[in-house]
Length: 285
Image (tube, rainbow, N blue to C red; front, side, top):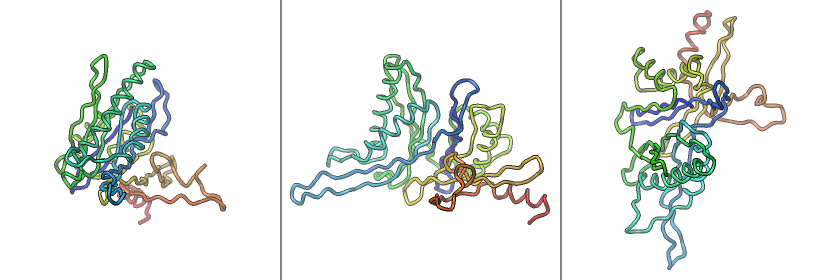
């Protein structure tokens, strides 16, 4: 299970999640990648006169999921390839993000049916797809859910994050996150990442955990960034943690040796004020 939070603030749309992969009961690993980008390439038909095929859409969608990890990964890998081979039929194709989502829905339904029918697996999951809509000339977000008709599944697609200040919470940690937001009067901005962090660190919600994954849209493309986090040991020492898609970089296995490549990422700093306050308490400005 998981916790995903997405929101729209100042016209910007952002996705974030935890990193927990629940295996069974209390067994888990914090290695699940849940915030992803998906490239889409759409072309015109090849010109019979010039033999040239024009690319009319080349953007990265954002994806964030909760629920069954196997189904999510199969869908992501399938659409990753398929969505780079789309072609419009002039006068017929609905050239919009909703139309792209209808393609995704076909794979969603197909993989869900196959998982249940072929291996008696529960494929239930829900996910967000966001990206540039050429029809609206704006970033739109759609939520996908499965409706079970016993003999088959049907994908339900609804537009979300329509207005500034909208947010959506998905996953097993929803109640904990909603309670935190309500009690502390959390605004719809990057402070929601503190809510996500609190639930990740809450031992009473074992289905949510690990480090935060994050992405937002820039120049109509979805961009994944790392998250600077921190930890305080029993002696009050502060450790900076640089997590990218849930993996802690630049230490242990990922500490660079002299002859290694450097892995470079950009990190957001949503907890900078908290860290500075800890330093102030230690007498260091």
